[in-house]
Image (tube, rainbow, N blue to C red; front, side, top):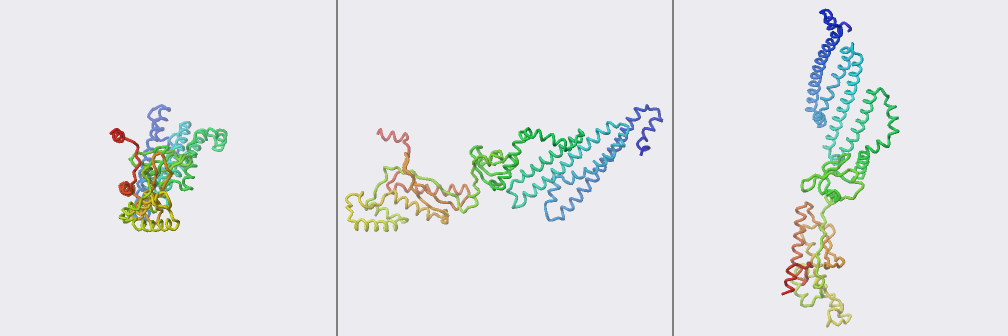
Length: 417
């Protein structure tokens, strides 16, 4: 081996080159030969591994091997053999330069750690992409867990690289880090909080990829597209992207619409404000007129019969409508609204349907519609809700009721006239 390493050196000495120049020229020649060999081996090994992995990917039924190729796992693994050859060549090439040999060997060892991290990262990315293709895992925060493993890998790699460069054993370096734990926690505070939040979000099933969430504090209203260790990305309905800190999901309040999406209907909850001075008792003539409305004609017959029976039995003086029992226009309208919603084809009849009277306010008496649209798609849901309130708003005058409105210019003008 000694004859081989000094083959160029002996030749140069024989032709009259100085000893120092001969050593440098010998090193350069051997380095050139080593680099050529390393590149050739790297090319051959890479081609062989790529060919083998491609054939396996074509014949296998799973798509995991295709994902490995996409993330360059075989290509990165192919660099291991050339690196081992380089480590073997260094003592030969730098036989006359011991100090430089030590530096290059440490550099190659550090590169070996970096190469290992590349391989680990490509494998983890492959696992991430593969898990996202599985129906049971595609909505889970896989990115967060992969990032945690990568952080651990990078920290481990840094420790070993530091130990190689400084010559300090890893265990001694870790002992020193114990004293600086407070500083480390402060530096990695967001990462630690994000990791804890990711676990809680996953375990408690708070958010999945694809969920529609509303987070007013951050102006988010859209679908979750990505959950990572530090952030959650939400694609809003106006196609903007909102980035939310992961730990905000457990520290702040937000709304997840998954329950509505998975249910059998989407809630309609809106009120009509009735002008209170338009509310009154109904006379017999007015009741007779309202019996022309098919949805409530049977109800009016039944109610009027019961009321008349009660009033007669108790000898109520009906000279005043205030005496005894009477129908009101607001009560009949409320019943009409209930019947109309019960007969509406777009309302889910298996879920709650209610027309209720809320507490009076300075803006009238709210009559609230509470029901569930069978169609949960946003545009269809809005159409159903608008269709219901279009009809009810137009129906209000038939019951001698009025919708409350704040005064406007026309109101003042009419008053003056």
